[in-house]
Length: 324
Image (cartoon, rainbow, N blue to C red; front, side, top):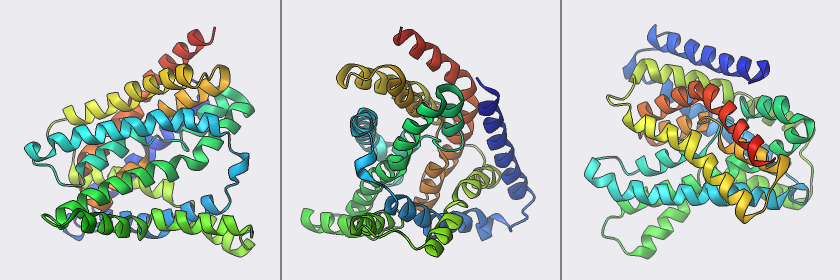
C-alpha cells in the first residue's frame, strides 16, 4: 500500500475521531436535540443535491467508457437486487424497519470512491488508471443511489398503502422517488446537460462550494453517530456486510467483468478495485435519512475502512496474478 493511500486512511480515521469527540462532549447539543440528524439533513437536502446536480449537468455521455461502466455496474446492481430480495425475505421475522433492506444494500454497494479511491487509482495505476477511475466515479453515486432510492421508496409506499391497489403503490413510489433530494437534482442536471448550455460560472462555483462540504460533513457524522448511537449490540450483521463489501462484491465484479465482458489489464484492475473499496459515507447519510440501521451502517463504515488496509494489497496481488 502506497503512502498516499495510508495517509488518506489515516485522515478519514482522524476526521471520524473528531466527530466522535464532538458527539461525546455534546458540543452540538444533547442526544435529544439530535444534532447528528440535523447535520445529516443538511447534507441530504442542501449539499448533496448541489453535488449531484453539478455532476450531472457537467457530464458528457459521449466521453464515457460505456463497456467498462457496464462491466462494473451490471454485477454491482445485480448484487444489490439479490441482496435486497434476501433482506426483504427476512425483514419481517427479524423485526426490521421497512427501509432496512435498502439501507443494507447501499451500505454494501457504495464504495468510498473519492477519499480513498482517487489516491488508490493515482498511486497504483497512474494517470491513465486515474482517468478510468474518474469516469466510473462520475456516474457511481448517480446510479447506485438511484437504485437504492427506488427500492426504499417502493418499500415505504407499500407500507404506507398496505392493502391498496398495486397501481396506487406504484404511483406513490414514482412520486416519492422523483421528488427526492437525490433523484430530482440528477434529473434536473440531466435536463440541463441535454440543453447543451454550460452552467454560468457563478452558479457553478456556488454548486462546487456546496458540494465540497458533503465529504467532511459525512465523515464527521460517522464519528458523531458512534458517540450518540454507539455500536450495535451485535457486530455480526456489520461483519457480514463488511465481508460482502470487501470480498464478495469485488470477486463478483472480477468474474463478470473479466469473464462476461472480457476486460483485461488496467480497465479490469480499476473496476475491481473500485468494487473493493470500503463502504462510503453516503451510506451513512442514507441510513440517517430513513432512520434505519444507523448504528450498523456506522460500524460498517469504520470496520471496512480499517480492514481495507489488509484487503487492498490482497486484491492487488490477485489482479497481478490474474493479468499475467
